[in-house]
Image (cartoon, rainbow, N blue to C red; front, side, top):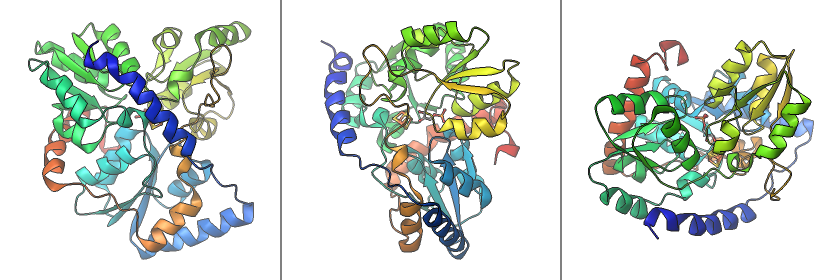
Length: 358
Ligand code: 13P
Ligand code: SF4
């Protein structure tokens, strides 16, 4: 068995342990929500801080980010916004790799997260030692990694990509005759391979949320709603992607929903996205793609357990105490900065990022 084939089982045990230990998002009364929100607004001003949130975190956090001059977006935009913003402190509501990316790009800023336990199954499933050995086995290949990785894995990479720019970056490498090592998401890797025909060897990681979308149940839903358009995040299984009218990053899914002539949209991504999507297309019917049905597990709720660990309560405490800071070893940071800057420069050149995004 090759190294890549041996990883999923070990990984799954690791992920199951972590998910079983994630504490539930505490319920807050409306009065408590208002009280936390008011206190956070004062602290943001006092501490010269700005909130940068991902679409998958709780609605209240997304609303707070927008009301206070912060930002809600996909992982590429979040990275760019943090680097461009003049605030001394960036409060990243999302998962650890997003906080680390902000710190790699802005070492002079304080980067806080409401909790440092918010991980990502792709990052956890791609430990640097094993990934590095995998790369060493194929020295003739360009190492391309998804942003959902540790700072050490980023430092080992030639290129970093997100779902927003992965196709264009791989096409660019193909045009230079490069062969590729891809990690960690096997579904995104397979999607890019199918789409571009690139010579790619795939690490076998997966996202515990998107991996759960079910083909059979999706087909049944599509039969019930024959005019619906199906929008899919590329971390979903190949068979689910094959049913999509549109495949893209979270931000691209929202844009595709807006541009779509369909009255009904079936959406295969974390349900946190429905908050923004329903603001952008209030007239449309939004239906979550099914995660239940045959072979479904109790974790099939289409919501990232780590994103759910960000709450108004721990955001308030973090800002009050100025703790949960992201720290990155300087030497590794400088190595990771090269492929990260490469990705951001490329994204500006291709118009995937524009000055208006920051
Ligand atoms: P996006 O870059 O599309 O926001 O995806 C990040 C992520 O973690 C999706 O699961
Ligand atoms: Fe990672 Fe999946 Fe959660 Fe995104 S949704 S942060 S890929 S575990």
